[in-house]
Every structure is written in C-alpha cells, then in structure tokens.
Amino acid sequence: MKKLPKSKNTRGYTKKEIKSLCNRLAISMPLFWQAFGVGNTVGLSNDGKITYYYRCDIERALYVLRHKLGKNHLWD
Image (cartoon, rainbow, N blue to C red; front, side, top):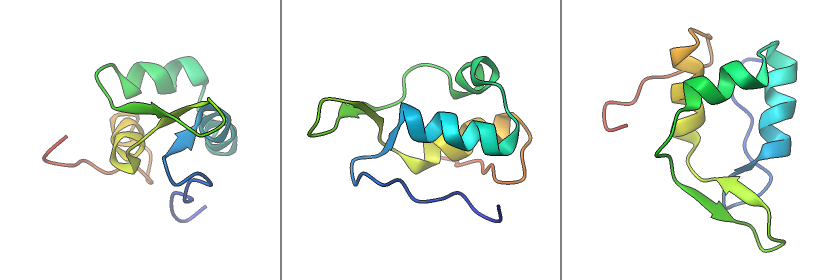
C-alpha cells in the first residue's frame, strides 16, 4: 500500500475500515487506538455507525506508530 485509502463514507472512516487498514498494515488494534488517542472528532453515518471524521487523525496515529503512511500535522 503506497498511500492511505479514501474512506468509503464521505463522513469518515468506519471502525470496520480502520480494522481492515490495521490488518493490512500488520498493526494491532489496541496499539492503533492507543496511538489514535482521545479527543478526536467522531460522528455518525446515516446508518448509525460511528465514523472517525478526519483523515489527518488516522495519519497522525500512523505517524505516532512510525509507519511510513503516517504524517504529522502541525494543527493536530
């Protein structure tokens, strides 16, 4: 994988998408959620599923994990 895939939902990544991403990148879910941290924006999709709004939050978690797809954002 050369870059982070786009979320299928315009409102952000679902937990299922994050789990799939972590599986593909060989990152444990507990480790990812620890890096993801608290205080990030979440919302609900039209079908009532939690979405993790911002791609930058996912990129920052990967950055904390020192993954090549990670990116640090100064405003985050």
